[in-house]
Image 1 (cartoon, helix red, strand yellow):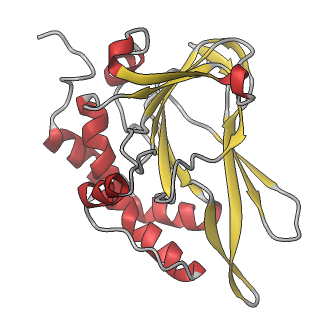
Image 2: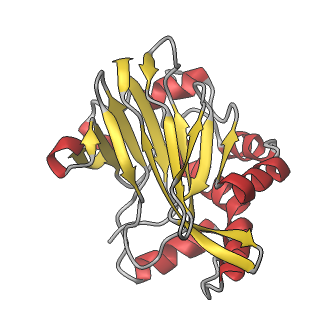
Length: 246
C-alpha cells in the first residue's frame, strides 16, 4: 500500500504515541516557560508525507502569502475538512492532554471559561458560534523567509494552547528558522525563548496569555510566537490549532 498522510497510522497508534509523552514534564515546562517540547511525535516518513501535501490545493481551503499581509515572508495553507487522517487523529489526542492545563490556567487567571474533556464538544461550541473553518495549517519557508511574532486568535472561542510540529530536519533541509516565543510581563521588557526542535518534534505553547505566580499572587503574561529567518534551504511545519475560525 502506498503510504500517504491520509492513511499512515490509525487512531490506536497515534493515541498511544501521544500517551507515551512525559506529560508531567511537559506540564511543568508549560507552567514555567509557556512552552514544552514533545520529542519524536512524528516519524520521518510521516513528516515527509505531510510536507508532500503542500503542492496539492485540494487538501486546503485557503493559501496565505505572508508578505502581502505584513506577516513576514513565506506562505502557509489552511487544511480543509476532512483533515488528513494523521492531523485528524493528533488534534483530539493532544487536546485531551492539554485541556486540563487550559482549565487550570483559566481558573488561576480568574477567567470563567472552561473547556470540555472531548475536542468534539469544544468544536461544537466553536461551530455553534459560527467558527466553522478548520485552522490546522501547513507552513512553507524558503531562504530569507521568516514569520513575525503573532498570536493565532480566530474568533470569540479560543483554546489557549496550540502545537507546532517541525517536518524538516535542521542542518540537512535548512539552516536558521528557529521557533521563537516572547513573553511580555507587566512593566517589564519582553523575555525571548528559542525552542530547539528536530524533525518530528513538536512544541506545545500558549496562544496568547498564561498565568505567572508573583509575590502578590498570580498575574497574566502575554505571549507571541514566530520563526526566525531561514538562512538556507526549505522548512515545513504543521500547526495544530484546536479552535476553528469564523
